[in-house]
Amino acid sequence: MQLIDGRTLAQTIRVKIKQRVAALPSSPGLAVILVGTDPASHTYVSIKQRACEEVGIHFEKYLYSATESEEIIIKKIRELNARKDINGILVQLPLPNQDADRVIAEIDPKKDVDGFHPDNISKLKLGEPALAPAVALGILKLIDSTNEPLSEKTAMIISSERFAEPISALLREQGVASNVCPEEHSNLKEQSSQSDILIVAEGHPNFVKGDMVKPGAIVIDVGTTKVDGKLTGDVDQASVEPIAGYLTPVPGGVGPMTVAMLLENVLKAYR
Image (cartoon, rainbow, N blue to C red; front, side, top):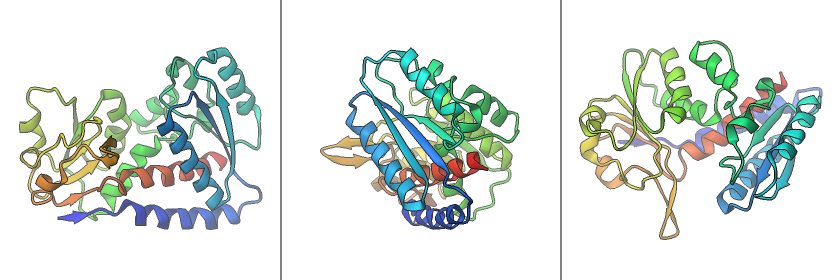
């Protein structure tokens, strides 16, 4: 079994992005809207800010209280849509009290670097060029890094339909057919143990055991939950390691790659 080192892969991508940014006539700009006081959201935004500063992307952060009206947030998004020096706009999710769908729909799809705007999701499903979610792009890069031939392989995504949609679309472009199942699906173990690629994003620590994994499978663990102060994935590493061919660690797998692909999306939006 081989651990897929997301940190090293992400760092290689960040070095290339820094070189490309340095060659541009002006700095790409990212604006992040952060609502409420959720510690995890504040941590994620700080990580994104440091990553932008490292590669030379201009970064702006707009803080709002948990009870801020959607109208005020939307007004700021419209201002950012109109600014030539801001190429990417990101609303940190989850929002505490606001309607995320309504807020995200206000972002100019060409500046939607999180890839959640309905126009971008629709284009992705149709196989048209679009800004894809950074997490989905990161997962694909991690799978590609195994150098396993993907055509005609099968994948199973244990997550919500909404999270899985862009990943399924990107896998389809690689010739991979995917099924989406929530964790409570009655046939889950039978289906997952027949899948060449298993992607799990349920936020349920150590949920996937060795008997749910096909021997030699590529296992991508998207889950991150604090258990006794330690970050824990959805995959029970001890029982899965002897079975899987490849596995992403938590931490150090999907997380760093998601940040790297966000930077890539800002660069794409700038172009």
